[in-house]
Image (spheres, rainbow, N blue to C red):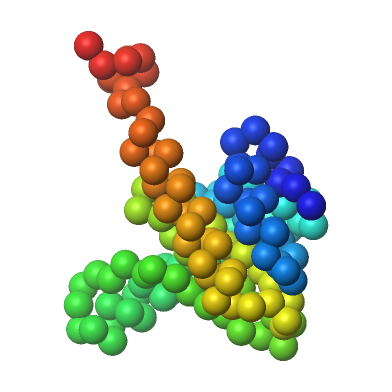
Length: 140
């Protein structure tokens, strides 16, 4: 299995698929746009997963803030357990998110470790990107 967008997102998603029993993964923006997804998902399914994942993250941020009696809360991860398996959602600090799905046999600790490692790599890559000037080019 490989990422459908082999150029920009395969390096993020393919290592997640190497965890035994992981079936699919999606890279998405915080506002719910799929920017990459694995072969097991169609484009329509990946877009649906991205939209739902974005909504789930928003609800979890609101719940965490409410329980803490705060106005805001940032979520580090969301785990959904169902009779079909597990969904792990991990946001990044720069507005993207990795969501992965494993069957009931997946080792959640290994999945979480791999997804968090990939999220850290995403952050490193974002920090290493050269800043752009207002005209879209390199700063003066």
